[in-house]
Length: 105
Image (spheres, rainbow, N blue to C red):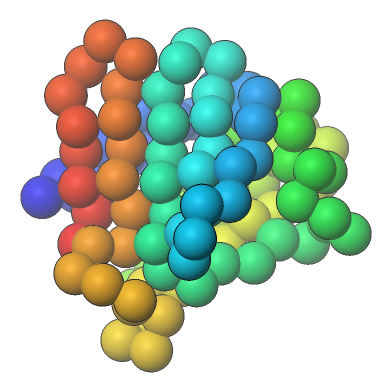
């Protein structure tokens, strides 16, 4: 398990190239080849998930209730971290392009 600070520093400044939905989870594919798989409930402030594409992550914050990304286009994405938001044992997995897999549970 990795701390939110580690994941925060790994995704800040990256650009989202794709949003992929697979069964009951979503993946954000970044410009450096990294993939953030989101298993928990999440939401965004855009009108559709495609609004996240081609936007750089400017701000990353974490509280006990949520992991949040604010993009350069002003759209925010929030992953819930409360007990009711969990679908399985982990909330997110970050697979680095050339680095280790980081699991956030």
